[in-house]
Figure 1: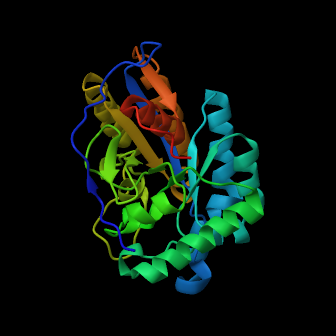
Figure 2 (figure 1 turned 45 degrees about the horizontal axis):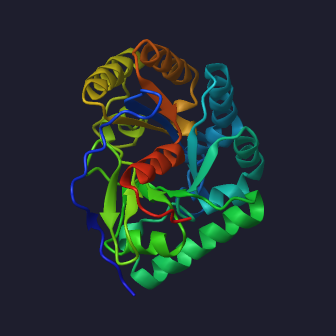
Length: 282
């Protein structure tokens, strides 16, 4: 049965937690690695660019997170798990959250409902069989979501989605299966538009100092608004040395502000659910 997905009634949860923290910072990593390179990227240069993720970027980011004493949320396609299992296990073993991120980073908006159900089943089976993980969260490849996707997530036991941009705090997406928590994202806090080189595109690779200014300014404004700062990075992009340093510098800057809660998306979603007062869904 197809389900609709729309934002629920506004319920602004910009309130303090029990320990007084009023602002949420979330570090997320879309761990795509070289996901569908063999299927869609015939050039060796493209393949090797993405292989930098599992080869170098993942471990470099894991070491940075360890130095910062932070846990992050990693969204990993099934293809990546199967073909780059060792770094995925290191993510799991370091205690970071692992969420679903498609199977081969497919264009979800091009799938019909039956196809999306099949892809959902495949990726969940891979995460369970290879990593022993039942994910609480889902992030759609390229943040592409169909109207029936939220209900499909609910039927598959997901606590939350993190693919939409309808607020800057966690909110509810109504589905026939009940509300699904949304931990919202936004393009300004994604590394890909800023750092990724695309042949033929007009974008210019940004100076890390400029990105630090952009993200720190956004953080300061969102801190004032008691919002949820969700930073999205990819190991093959932000695993480069100067960008890892940027992330460390940004976290140190954030820690100078009072009342900031650094959390995974799952922790944020569970907090939101407790504020809603609804029954637990998993």
